[in-house]
Image (cartoon, rainbow, N blue to C red):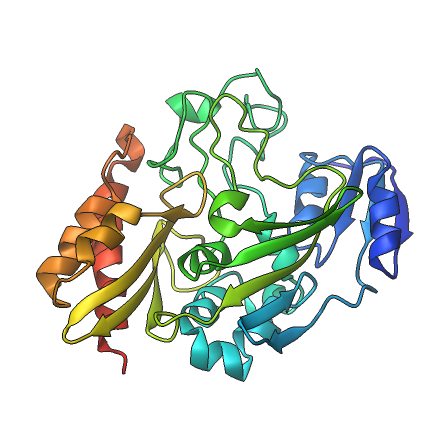
Length: 329
């Protein structure tokens, strides 16, 4: 498909980006690893593309509270940063499990937060109905191929799975997304940043149209160091998750004092399981406890014939991630 003509605008600072966002039908270009793909497919057809490549939002910094990531920080730089690898290993592992080295060298933190589903029907503008792409048109996935779709957080309007690995890790780490707009600054807990499809799957985040992501902060918590990411997929690299889990543990006196369990590949947004976390509290770290957490994490799953396997896969991915986290010193 030919990309329709568009205006290209390069900005050097936040003011330039916010001024551009005041115009309708604008797309922000960070690394371009998702946007350019969607433009080629005809899913995204902005009249103005605003290149943020010159903006100074690339920092990866230690703060008194923990870690601050600029919205334009590259995924590869974050994943290989010594502080991230040592103090937030689940984030490094999640980033390194995504895409390819070439894409990670371009993809950004802000772009990752806003990447869109890989649902085949969402991406097929000529032949498939999609409420996310065209509200009210229907969802072809309901009666179609569903192997890559969600079983948690779905609705009658959409069963598309969220694609990010990074976001799953950030949910487990209690990260906060900082945004700026004409009405000022907002801090949005990442667990609330992505929205459930409900009747409006076209609304994917809490970000207002005129707002800009400027940074993500990750608190230094007792469970951040003891954290692992496990991703089950069809091949060992360059594949999206069938099911994944970011697991964090604080173990004290031989029992779990705190836990975080977040799942990817199985839900319509990065999925935190508070029930699984509560089920681990006060228990010795054991295979039995971790399998129980997996059971709780997948409760409420709504399955279709082609995706039912994700329930059992999700349970086992949770158990494995918790087992690996428990082994860490």
